[in-house]
Length: 284
Image (cartoon, rainbow, N blue to C red; front, top):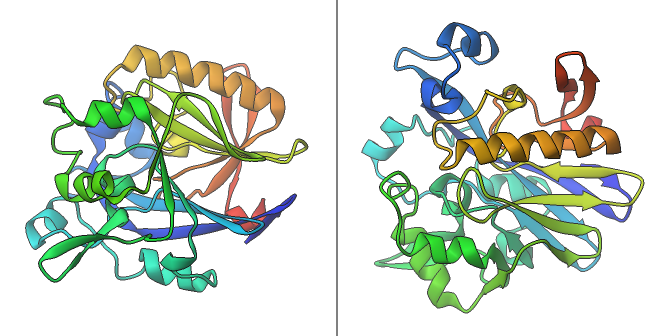
């Protein structure tokens, strides 16, 4: 746990999975990216589904919720899903809470590895996991999921989205919004339309949950971007602007998918803004 002004922050590890390393690093040659994160025999790199839990007075805010447990053996094999060591509800219990304690879920975007824990099977139906929580999503992103393009179709899954849409628990956000004093969402558009970062700030200190703008600490360099990004040049522009502001402000970054690094600081060098002091959240 980390105390950040009035907030208590917890890392919630929901499991591991793997994606193709070439897809995760786009145009970067494999001999370069594999120095950062080695691939397995199927060219997949290990990734975490690391979420952020924020105690904010009488509110308990969860940022993303991982993959969930609804998927069959074929899906789990394709993505090398491992929830033996880390799992959403075990992690919540370790932090001293259950799903029923969560008052707010901020979904950075609705790809299955970020929102799959929102729903679960109950007999022959699907139910909302965080049944007392308001789920915050950008309106533009929600509308975008209704007519998925060929590149994202397999990331927007009906079993995650339809129960949310029918729940009455969605709160649609229109651009940059303060969810609570000190907790703000920052929309970015390069990875998918209407993704949002989550900024936790006390004024003196700031931590930003990076979602898929910077999925790992290896993605800071301008050309080190995912082939999954819908608008790669927008990602490059957004990333450069964000890193300039974050480095100047002394912000810390929280990485959702990095297999090792939870957070880092930044420093400016002749080569640009780079990672400094990669570490665990509780070593803020």
